[in-house]
Image (tube, rainbow, N blue to C red; front, side, top):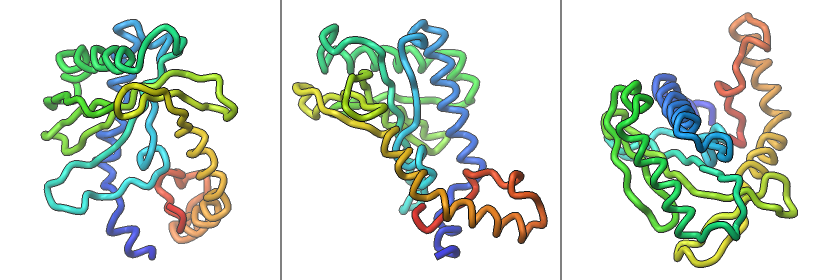
Amino acid sequence: VRMLGDALDVPTSMSELLRLAYDALSAHAVEVGIGASTQLYSQGSMRLGTLVRPVRDGADYDVDMVVERAIQRTSTTQEGLKLQVGEFLESFLPSEHARQLEASFELTAGARCWTLTSRTLGFHIDVLPAISGELQHDHGIWIADRDLFHWLESNPRGYAEWFEDRAAPALAEERMRLAKARNVSVESIPEDEVRTPLH
């Protein structure tokens, strides 16, 4: 299992590029003035630490991001929310933050999300528009359905917390094993370098 995991692991260089892209988008949100009412965060495999190499040679790394607006649902529509996030992403394309990544980007619309693609860097980010919601679960959000007609509940951060809680015992054990093998302290082993059977 460990050998298979090693074969699927994402190169450190790609992990760093993805972090830089997320940081650039977050910095741009602050610069254009939506940062105070908006959170940008990873979800899915990037958030969980389960991102793997693409199956096909030459395929893009596929990662996910949420753009969560702290606005009332009654202040917009599902289509309106999507357009707001699209305008933000369009303004990112010619920005200094994008240029600092030394890559070109293209933006395409999906059913309820946007896809920001960089062929030169080898990844695309599916960006999901969302609204902060008063839901029964902590961190719950409202997202549009694929027809941009109904609001749906989602909770990617809550799921990530559950996943991390389940993986914690094995994560601690694997960090200790790696620290012993490298003859270093456990604290010097970054958690994002560790893979558990759940990962």
